[in-house]
Amino acid sequence: MTSTVLLLPRNGLRRLMALNAGTSGAIKFKHSSADDLMLLSYVKVGEVGYQVPLAPKTHRLNQGDTGVNGLWFQVPVELHCWWYELVRRGDQFCVPRDEFVKRLPGPLTDPGALGYIVLTYARGAAFPPYDVTPIPEFAAWLVTRDGVSGVSVAVEPAEFGTGQLAARWPIDDLAKATVMVVGVGSIGGAAVTALAGYGVGRLLLVDPDRLMWHNLVRHVLPGRHVGHFKVDALREHLSDQRSDTRIVPYRFDVVDDAHEVRGLLSATDIVLCCADGVAPRRVVSHLARRAGKPAVLACVLDDGGIGEIIRLRPYPDHGCLLCRRQALIDDGTFDPEPELEAGYGTGTLHQPMTAVGSDLAIVGDLAAKVTTATVLETAGHYTHRLPGEQLNLALQARRGWPGPYDLGYTGNARWVSTVAPPRDDCPTCGKP
Ligand SMILES: [Zn+2]
Image (cartoon, rainbow, N blue to C red):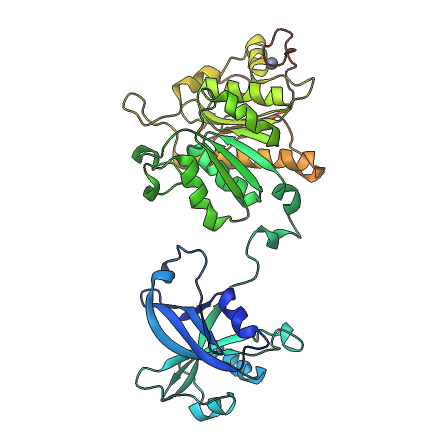
């Protein structure tokens, strides 16, 4: 059995907590009977009334049925000790109405046949001796002719962003970071979501594509964004959930608009490329190297069988993507890069989809992890060091592939720590 919950937005409670707020006034609620949920939507303090919108603006209850009236009172903490006991015991218990009224600073009107809600504020409940007990500063009551029962409340906290993680997670260094994500398809969309979850402060999204119906089976974006540019839709999608992350969308094609993308790199700490196709990956490798920035490249190979994440760093002894791939060819492994030309499924008629969305999301999440770890390592957090510069993950068992790609069981992961050096004649690593 469920019971009604009353949501209390902080911007409304602040009005009641003001020292000159007086001791009582009118309030209004929005109500959703389907959710058995009420929202404090209006408070009157003295002669002034305030609307109390719930963040985010798109919350369904902001459009809920309105016009449910109630009252608020400032009360002694003792009354909230009663409330705690009533809510703990359940709906069937109530206190006599006249006992309740004795502890209020003003009278109650007749509750009629249906009753009404009273919100009470106990100044001081947040301080000793009550700070170690669950006695809340705000409580709600259903007043009926039969008596007064407790109503569960949920108070909007002052902080619900990544700041809460400050004791356990290096939020400050990530909040300062800017990550460019090139390609926000199924891998990139998952990576962007994860980067925001890690608390990266600014994300520059580069992708010229729109979300179309065939993307929905794998993309993090929901169907209401069909037709929108993916970069814009991701910004909107994440703004409610991860308001600490600023998302800047660019409808650029990294190959055709390489000049514009190059211009963004000076303000970027690291580039994450989740675009499939050989050309975008080579362009990212080239631009990042020339700008002296690290880059992470994520893709799936072999029809979705293998996830691959490569980290490129602009060190004198680290080769670019081309040099790394050439070394594989030279030592007799092979070049997996042409695999990417086929893509891992664009959903067009001539090219069936291969990888499943949740596998692509695993690769996107891991790519975000590698990117975040690189930012943190650079900032001196050595507990975030990675074991190598390339990670291959079997999304499905693949046997008989050469070198690091021989991953016998689903879930096998292999890090490669050796990095091919730059070749003398490399157009990316060589002298400009
Ligand atoms: Zn090179």
